[in-house]
Image (cartoon, rainbow, N blue to C red; front, side):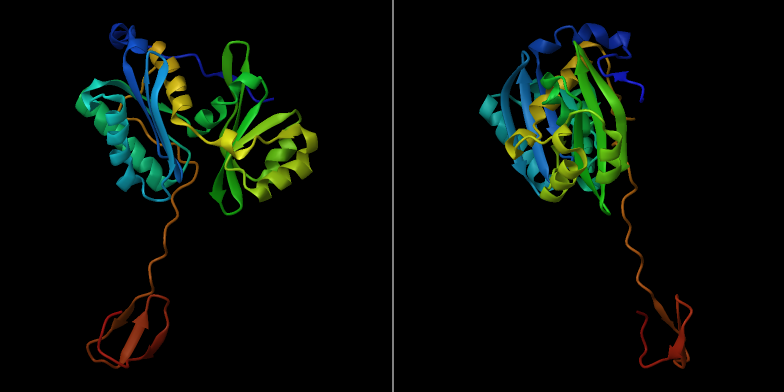
Length: 278
């Protein structure tokens, strides 16, 4: 049985505690660019002032700042009014996480305000916390694999039951023995596999209930801010469960000056038909 880790415990930084006493009375900005669905939220006094969730595909770097400007305009706030930054740190797409985290770090540095990084899977799961059931968020990891974790609220405590990891739907299903809520990127194929494997133990909410929203990310971040549990902008890193895929270099053909023989990187020899380096 995996050891449960309480996600409401913290490591305090005493020098910042006093500045965080009034965290609920100041504006917090939550940023999530983990996947092709991005989300922003501005929260004040524990209430959502504005939230925007949109399908950005691969356009995180192009669309993030214009949408943030629009959100600030709608709330009649200026960027300097933001007192805290909360960012989703993955797992997710490499480019998406790079854009969101670098933006969050830049804002935290320039505005000299606290920064908190939250697992994207945890933020995905948190909107189902009130059910009291285990919640298993799922993201596609490619190669027929998924990224997953398991969380559960018991009483007033929010626990991580299993950490973020790469697995398959079949392997995941074989380890779950109780009724579980599945959320995240649940494709029809994944839903079908879960239903076959777990039958009535697999609870899959409708798509609208599975939409990841930055307001839940903000709520988790504010809990950590209240406890004085912060991240340092210089050291905050994305959660990458797998190294980025790399493209193999093209085979190059080197031409000798004599123009008579060629030898490529694959070790094959041939005859020259032109004078070039490919």
